[in-house]
Image 1: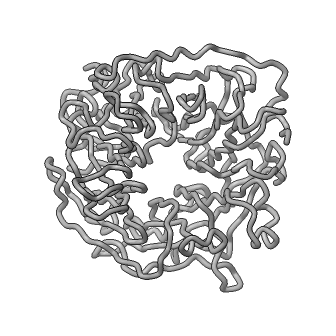
Image 2: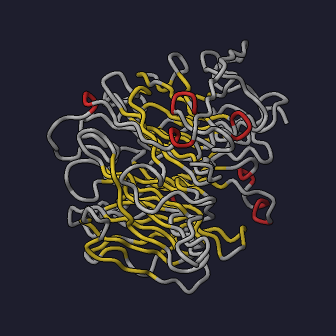
Image 3: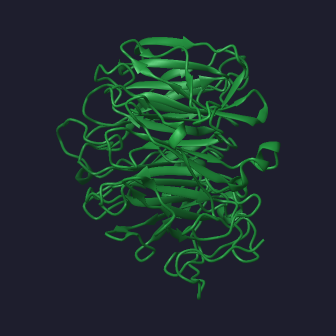
Length: 498
């Protein structure tokens, strides 16, 4: 099903050959130290959840969970490029696997290092650290037990690591989802991950051996299935809360949004369900993000619903092709009664809502034009470009004082003028999206992952920002040729740090 062109009318497909270099695996998994000019000599208070070297410029981390490491298929690796006064610089790239110097464990086939990723200053030294999940890791006898690893930040960038948590039960899949926040308001960052419907809460500060100040498992007996999690202060009390997109067991049509509120003792054991004005629960989705869109003192929630073909589609016509739901925060927490819903048939949003577009498969919130309101990057990896199936696209919905709007939405795909590359079937451009202000000018740049690019090797794109929002002019792409990594089925660009 053909889709309308995004942004300006597509009149020319600009093709740039992407270099893909397969190096010996020893090279592919050895991290590059960021140049000394990237970081300062002394630690300073962390000013960003994404500044790994403490230089004041946020950085971008990304995953390749299908990557081959030392001949081990799907062991996975992650990478980072550092921000600067001119934005993200690929010359500062680093690559890490579980075989990299100073990393615990060791790469394992099917380990999927990079299944999830979040960032926070765990040891309170002024440098942001990177937390990486490996949901397929086998720890001793238990299969698919999973693990969570931290890579420490410092003045020269990321280096060394420690294990935060290892699964000790078969199919625990620790690290499938991970997030960080200060849930008890003590000034130390905490980490959460999921084991089935149980939440593992690791409370900071953390020691350099990875041990937490305390650990707690919040058990759930309702057989819920968590599909995504996000962290924000939704009621403005100074403590972070955990928002989750969940399904009732394996029932895709029983979606809901749960809030575990932060408090003096950390996350509440019993979550609340976000409800509509009629008192029934708000229909949720599969992806979720948090950030301040309307410029007030409360973080807001955006939920992406991308799974179609169920009975509730009849009650939610905007579910066609995927939809996103905006839920504003308030003194009482997320206000489901004030939710707003968008899809590609909403006024001002480019494209046409079509089955399996997956509008909302990836989400990120930040201010792209410096107007003080958070904008929403929405990945649409199932978008067909003309007759090219699942080429993918990304859209940015502007934020306003009353929430997001379709008016003024800007969209890109690989056939948009000035965007490197060409739209190809199965690229899944927009499979991951991330807004990051890498040059610290008050306007976030847009990073986009296309994990299906080049027969599932994957690649990454970066779009500059301006006073009018994101722009294709000056956009660039990079992938395995720059990173020096094994490309085969790596799925580079599957996700970014959150």
